[in-house]
Length: 493
Image 1 (cartoon, helix red, strand yellow):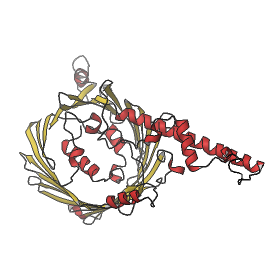
Image 2: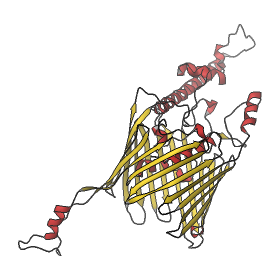
Image 3: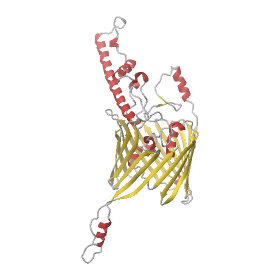
Image 4: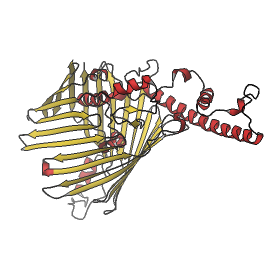
């Protein structure tokens, strides 16, 4: 389950219109959430409160070998932050847990930092809206956390300097470990690409990240939902100035929708040239209630490989539809004047708005248009070709919208997550759901041990010639045992 302070951080990004999908750090976020989800290792309780519209508190308790916990405090001057925050009683389960990440459309990014689409600048109302959206107010976030009984401290400061730049500071201090680390992030997002300059006091580490989006141009006539596909390429470079140890990696991400079912699909390919590691992932929404992910790892130097699988199964209530008023993933609705029409008639209207059909012109009412028969036939053929193409685009848009709205309007009550790896011989099981206002996560990690291969020549034997160690191994060897088990409760007001 997503911690409460992470939910506040996500709400801060939404209220300040900062997209995290362009970050290279999150380019493989979908596969990580489906394969590498965390299993609680103890009994954990988290109680959180929104004391004012701009301040948030959280208290954590845990019984891992001994009672320990932490106290967190967060303040932000973002004015619309409370619109995106909801307590544990009413928050949708999809927003409280990490799941499949559906990427938002890549719109044109204007010079003033506001998202905009192609509009007619001669319209006075449009001009007023653009001038109003150009006003930017600097916003900030302050976060602090203290652990007990160890008295470790961590802090974070986020400053939105301009609509396209952001400064982030993260610090960790531990008296017991004699550790004091400060990391600085400077990010610039032009929506076409996001660049990060990173500096850490640990080993004087310097880093640079970049993620570039290729497919960002709207389709012809602006009648399709978005460009149905998105291709992104990113890379990172690291250098420790003290030890002079370098590091680098590159990742390619492709995101699209199925034109027949509207289901999203994400493919990634990562490569680390220094360590020779190659990783490829495949993640897809196989239905409104299920998700599947597969990952293949291969090392060029050691010739080692691994295959991992992960899946999700959601349960929902059909009689309680979910309200999507505050959901940031809601797609852009169809214009009201076209919402009640079928795709064929809607396409016809869009066609007449963009491509005039000269075959409908009456020669009696417009005698000035003297078009030869062969040219008239050519115009009719072109009109029919455009009409069929627009109708196909509109049908694809309608299919994708219907599938996305099914997920958005569903009231999911619980989710089962499973993940396994062939090389590690482990199986992770996690259940997340809601019960009487509590957000609950309960799971275990099962380890499959190898069976005994028989007694070795060095095993001690009894008087009957039977290996003592082999007998003990067969009696004590358990093929499956839980390596980790825990349950977590979250409650917020």
